Length: 175
Image (cartoon, rainbow, N blue to C red; front, side, top):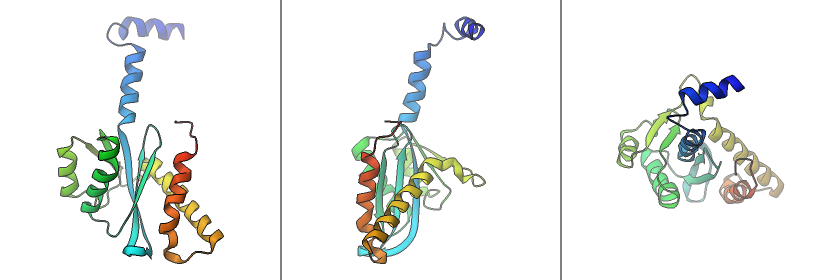
């Protein structure tokens, strides 16, 4: 440990401090979001069959919205309405390689707002793990609520806000 500290002070300390490195890492993580689509689900009111889910890397805050279609226009509208206008522009957006995420429309949107769009590797989709974990938690909660209330197939739409509320009000180690 002492050797490491001596080496740190000789090589890095004149240029950077641990606080600078920590601040840079924190700033990076604070502005990084993962996005994913879930569906096709049983048709709900308004012909809604999909859910877009986004998770903030730093706080683990989750935002969701039901969608009729999975096109890039729906993703762009979601990002504008639910993320940028409420929380600001993310620095980095991570997604899988779905056509709605690889679209020219989303690329232009990201360029316009200076968002770096990264893709999880096709061969290793687990890289998008935070949003995948949140998807499982969300839909496990929805399924549980629907079974206990004996709801109809398309009633997932009514359970979505309830499960989201429970997620965002439950304390997390990250927050």
